[in-house]
Image 1 (cartoon, rainbow, N blue to C red):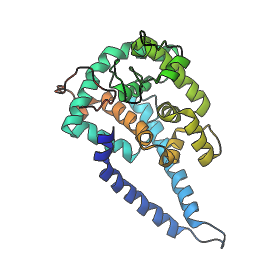
Image 2 (cartoon, one colour):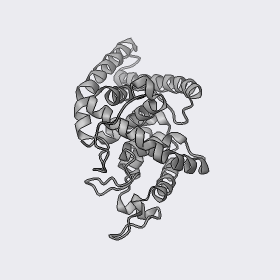
Image 3 (cartoon, rainbow, N blue to C red):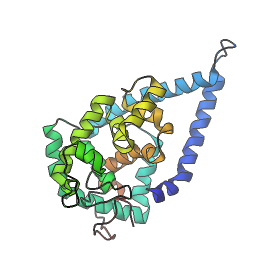
Image 4 (tube, rainbow, N blue to C red):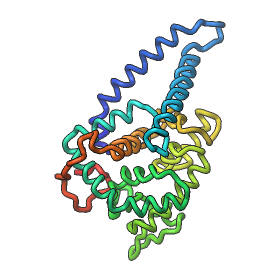
Length: 275
């Protein structure tokens, strides 16, 4: 993850610059109605509201046409990840491994999502968590297909001891992960926010949501409203997931139709981009 964030740094800086110019244009178009008015704040509110409304409208039409069941909100970070996954040779090779492994676990995960009436596109959360490697381990001691830490795994019914670690059992870990995600969605009212909380912790997301919006519950567009206050990895988490879904839904469009995974497919660290 750190290596990829480094690659993206210059690209995301460019995107921020473009956004900054757009905000400045709106600021100077707003009449200063009173000495107490805050034109910068007003501009930011208008830009955010307009972008959210447009994104939601466009996403709804696009989702219905292409079979998405998670919102596919238009965002420059998603585009950056799509480009990275599909053009960087080393990253593309690794992503080809993910696609190959997906065939093994998709039927099981899909069936469990259907049982719970949850979005099928949540499978891509497992994709970016572990690259569909059920034995993945992280430096922070998270493990398995869904990268549970020990405490959360136990909270959702998994046995985690020196002798038995059910985080590494795909079916049981999937049951626990979907139960956790369902609880997070109930709390935050949004799958984007639920995914953010899954990555960085529900209390942090709840605290930031209250700070920015005054309420823990929100919409998928609120993920981007609060993203600047999230840890860097979490800021990229949902865009990375949506980018992975975008490519997986039409791999041929992005050069994966006949892709051969050149990378070693042996089990390795939890970072799905690990060399």
